[in-house]
Image 1 (cartoon, chains in turn orange, purple):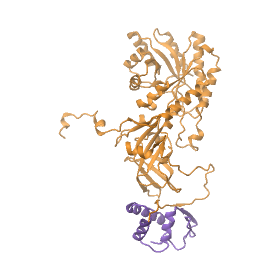
Image 2 (tube, helix red, strand yellow; image 1 turned 60 degrees about the vertical axis):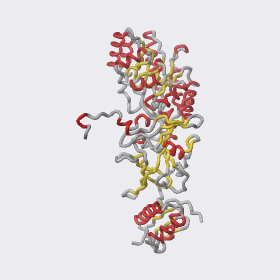
Image 3 (tube, rainbow over the protein chains, first blue to last red; image 1 turned 180 degrees about the horizontal axis):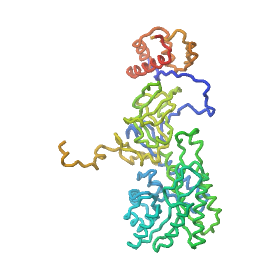
Image 4 (cartoon, chains in turn orange, purple; image 1 turned 30 degrees about the horizontal axis):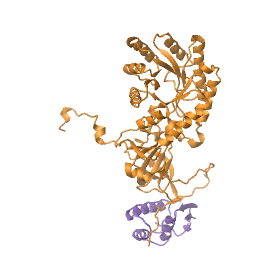
Length: 450
Length: 80
């Protein structure tokens, strides 16, 4: 006789009086495929855990965002935020779509050059630009966004010494009505620092002020802050025209658009609370279009959107290592990936789906990673089907920041695979090996025989 | 190992403890195990019964039944 399908026995206490008025769905739909590729086959071929990126979704996100802005404003340029995900394959997808590069370090600058981005399509942001990096960026006609007066005076000095004509913008920080106010980067608008910096640049012989930049925050949930930011940049651009007859070529509104991940502590899921890119585009373009610029003087609008273009194109596949019961009776599940790989689990309540069909019964559990550290918690409380050792899980919306902020701790970082438009899979970063990790280490002679 | 006499169970998986007023739900295999526990049954017999009927590795089921029994004990549903 054929045996019946097994499911772990479970008993759950029924608690009345605490029904959820939103009636959230308790059924966990199995996610057996990413695009058209089977999750179990992916893990079978490339191991577990495994990061998976959908090229199709990246392109879809990019094309959607550019369409939204370009149907509202005549001159729009996106610059891919390298720090969000600087795996070369990812960057090249964005560059193929027409995106410039936005970098915040010499390391990222070199990556952009190696990815074939012309120097004049690289925006060089950040507070740490070394002399040789500034010289190179100036020679390449890259757009250098000055962060502080020390950098401004360094650039003036280097321009004199090396006969450079750098194309520059200043980063402006400002009060947009949000908390926390990001005033550690750039020059302040309200106290006149930004205008002082502009004046200093105009008085320099070699620096060519071509743009104005701001980046007001990250995971911004209010569109009005962008309207305020756009208005203040327009005010500076307008003053430049009126007082110095100087036309600014571009306004760079930076990044900060959120993905639909759910922030920790949120009452409602991100899918219900996050403004759409259309709403951000309306807020920004309405201000610039109505500010009073002549049509021919309308500045190019640059956006450095990162997270919103990549987060939902990334998945982390993993495997259940063990189930256990905590001292207070709560169920805990240990996975083969932790906060070392999924850094964003510090901020988000990531959606996690089973990768196999399961019964209708669910239970609340804590998802722990495999690290020998108390803080290694992926979800503090999640309702999932009755998982068994060896079951597979899919974590959603992990494309942003994980593949740049991940930590090599205790164990090795896994393979990263990209699924192309034709559903072919490509390893775009090999799983690390001990030899790779140790290749940068040196042993002093007196320890060689230890 | 035996379910307390006053515990009411249904085939649909509903469990009621009139002593405390608490109610519980279980999945079908949980209900089946509870029905076996209405008679005094030892752990090995229970494991043999379930493993002969369901497609489950014996060691896996041993882990699961121990966890299930500990849940019943924690909720004061078994005779001492």
